[in-house]
Length: 171
Image (cartoon, one colour):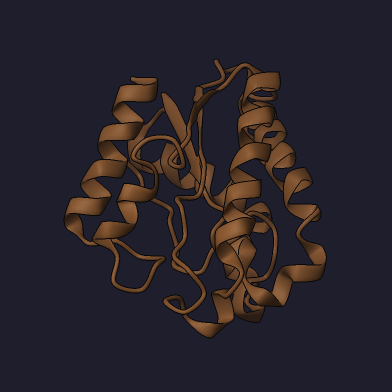
């Protein structure tokens, strides 16, 4: 079974679109509790965020994203450790490549260099923390953008490539 807590517009730790519900850090414990309620136990936690953290509204706060990622990992481990439970397998997934500014919506312009930099930070954090990292900038890489009309979202085939990259890298 899989519990998907994804919410369009979610960020690592900003109130996306001014809404607290889009702030993963603020809602993370509830997400983990939902997993327990629906499955009884959690074997794997996949963290896949970042594109929305690169929106123009956060341009002056992008350095905070690194700490948000580190905090999510710490909170994941703590959630299980305080309950005397085995910490699940944690997978970090970089945000995928973003299209050029002329293709993406105005609110996300400048995302391409931002998600690339964020991917490098996530790789470094994952290595330091001993986690599996799925680097969508390396596999499937820029070819993924062939499956996007807006430079951010993908069609079914594009999301299929992402799923394949996750399985190949970590499972």
